[in-house]
Image (cartoon, rainbow over all chains, first blue to last red; front, side):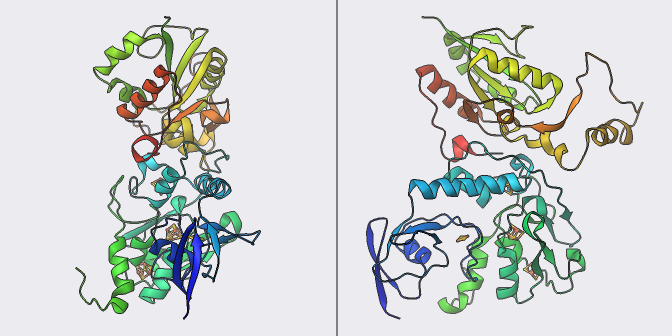
Length: 239
Length: 181
Ligand code: SF4
Ligand code: SF4
Ligand code: SF4
Ligand code: FES
């Protein structure tokens, strides 16, 4: 497809026509915060952290699903955007039960990192303290819904890369939650191959390897990236 | 020059933030030359005094004593710091807010899992009743600075206090100075 020329944060750059603004920005070293985006699987546009301003559009657009266009002028770091991003992250903290001090993912968590990036020193919204469950019926993995940010990354890797489609989303609004198979305990979900891809895809401490204690759970993103790019890069053995 | 009047307050927390304060080690000597400690669990002062310049408040607001205390501290303090995650988010202290009523929490802690002498703590005027919901400090009164961490490291505490002693507002940024947990 034709090459498009556009401006992101006053930087003139060219991108392939099918690229998204997020990809074009990343290729030029421009950082846009993301949470639900995961390289190698379809983009979802769920979290809205990657919102950007495009000249001539009154709406804010999610960079991870917006294709580049010729002559586009994009701003990624305005005060308005940073305010919204900070608000989104604060709302995620208020909506679940995030006790970082006792979390398996403490120090290795994308939500925590986003809070640091946004300069969040406290949450202005009332904590909801929802009553959510933990499922440790699977022999190797567990899911703690208290820490789930509903990014659907687990759903997408399991469906698109592993081909099992064990995960899905159920409920609406504040009762939304991820389920395994037909809302069965994960350990009884017969479609699950125990491949661990969802464990590595989860940005938070929600999906974890059983037996990990505070701050021990690290997601192996490199392994996931290897699996999703192996064919295009023709790398058949992981380095 | 008059010294800065410093207080530290302990609400619903594990005292870990105060322990971390003690981890300031020899810098505490330097601090002692620049401030007057006027109220703290580290010293013997019964009443929270008037005219405090800076207060570090550890812990969430979990019972009626905390509620009374935090209002008094706000009234009498120029610059109030929410000190540590329990003060800022409710943290572990607020775990009980998830589904459990006060009665259920007490029943579970003092009766169901008690090995010896199951009994609810009760002594009017001595044991303060628990509030229905544990709240972070800023949900009750305005806060001037948030110093997160569970506990905030000694270097983070020092960074904030040094800025205040210079008369600057501490700029807490990045992993070392800002992270929850
Ligand atoms: S998932 Fe992340 S933000 Fe939530 S408690 Fe764990 S470390 Fe903190
Ligand atoms: S372990 Fe693999 S198959 Fe099982 S739910 Fe996770 S991604 Fe799907
Ligand atoms: S379990 Fe993890 S990967 Fe799945 S939706 Fe929740 S936060 Fe995202
Ligand atoms: S990263 Fe674009 S909407 Fe989540």
